[in-house]
Length: 216
Ligand SMILES: NC(=O)c1ccc[n+]([C@@H]2O[C@H](COP(=O)([O-])OP(=O)(O)OC[C@H]3O[C@@H](n4cnc5c(N)ncnc54)[C@H](OP(=O)(O)O)[C@@H]3O)[C@@H](O)[C@H]2O)c1
Image (cartoon, protein in one colour):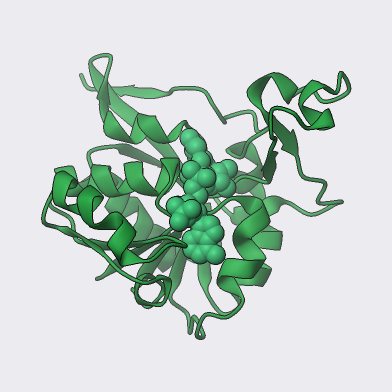
């Protein structure tokens, strides 16, 4: 089973670090090409390689760690997914430039965090996300905590809980297996339309909180 990562920012890089700590292999990519990642992959461990977006996207399981605004541009030209597993690590938020009017808009409850919710109408975010990866089996995961939390699977005398959800049982089992292999405690939240919204920023009831499985 191969793993690819599209995006090497806060989420993508910390996911790669979490895998590297356990010696799990993956190919990481970004918009600037593999050369830009050579120092990073040298530092974090031999199991992680830098590749092109196309190489990362050809893996059996692909984490999409892109900003919402970049999804269409980055994903639309990729080869067919053919039932492969795509992990939706995104949240439907817009990152605000400090000098943008939105950053100080009193009607934006998220302005203090430097983000703004993207209006998806009646849709939930993984429903929209799935349209960018037609034919993929989408699992929502790794999106509900700060990326840095992926550096700490063991916290407060237990294991950090990571939620995941999806409509394909086998795909979910594979992602749950990665979560477990990386040292976290996986909790299946059910189908994409239930678990996705619960654990998505900005307003999901289970997002941003730290849940810990206490080992007895
Ligand atoms: N930040 C967090 O703590 C966190 C936690 C959970 C979930 N998330 C979600 O994860 C997603 C990514 O957030 P982030 O904070 O990691 O963003 P980020 O730090 O800005 O990183 C975004 C990455 O996307 C890459 N990228 C942009 N356009 C691309 C393209 N066309 N092809 C390939 N790569 C491209 C960028 O490449 P370059 O490096 O070459 O610019 C960068 O590596 C967002 O949806 C966010 O809501 C973030």
